[in-house]
Image 1 (cartoon, rainbow, N blue to C red):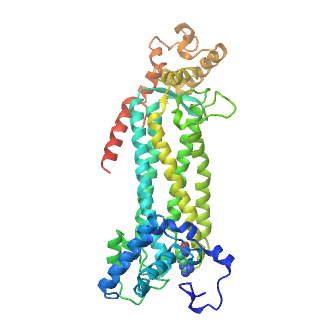
Image 2 (cartoon, helix red, strand yellow):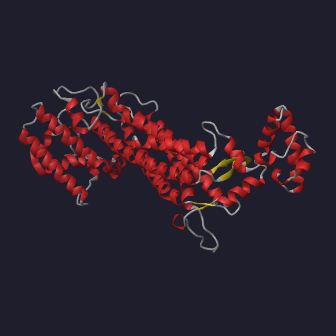
Length: 460
Ligand code: ARG
């Protein structure tokens, strides 16, 4: 048992299986950079308050720097018997610099250490994900601008409803991502609080300058309760929840791209380099990227449930249960980063088939509501107008024609108030242009929203 940093009170070595079962180094070694950064800051603070001499602090920092370089070069031997990243690094430090290394853990516990490491790691991960969201949003803005006038059928129940512009549709995706971005930023504020100084659970008798350590590590503040700080992982759960919403949005985008890329819709062409073929059917070009993103939503949702369930009913303060927070958290970070990257790379290169969209919009009686509104403008009550247009649509269905393909006499059979000016409102362009209010699909409105969005993004 003597090779353990905590071996003193044990009379026999750890069971081999138990050693492997309880170890986390296989996955928490990902935290090495943040662990070392936290240790360096802790050592500098200890020197500042006189717990370490400047020379000791110097030696510790030097040793930690060498370990960092060694890990980065791939020369570090991780040991399962040293359990986790924290004890691997600390044991190596002692091995390298001797007894001075044994002073690093003064006034600290792995409990506040790991909580700090995760927060440092997650803060950085959030910043990367925020940047990817912005990159995808930029791509959507460019696409929306290019296709601000392009008309497509808008759907409800996946049935043709009313014409909308493709730009408007892209801006709907943009808005979802805007809220995702805001949610992550909000979450980041609660992540960016430093637990160090909480020690195992009760705080520590050493005169630590917690605010100094926090400043060195870029934390916005220090935790106010040691029991809470070492035990709760709500900040990580919150991130996983925000992540589940991001993936939910991406899964919706994915579903639409998959439908639109099908021969039956033919609204878009995905770039070949984002698709794969079939080993048997030579004609196939499969939209793998959106399909996979749609599928990966499942694991991110699962990770959220795992985190919530892990935290549920844990008594204060730290429990080993919390070691299980890392794999779902890391997996959520990786999946989000990868999915957002794929979308941000792909969207600017999606080819829009404007003619196919317009043709689809023309074939589904998408302007039926416009005809009803036209009748209202001629003095008819909306309910009556609805009925009249419904009958006209029925004739269209029976004869295989859109409303705009009927002549004036034919339309007048349904209502005598219909005049020559009706054909203007039956065009797709007339229909979208008429929705000219804030949030509406009219190209002028879409351009206005794009302009505002660009200003917002430029201002950070
Ligand atoms: N590997 C542990 C974790 O991930 C570090 C904290 C362990 N603390 C303890 N008292 N056993 O949570």
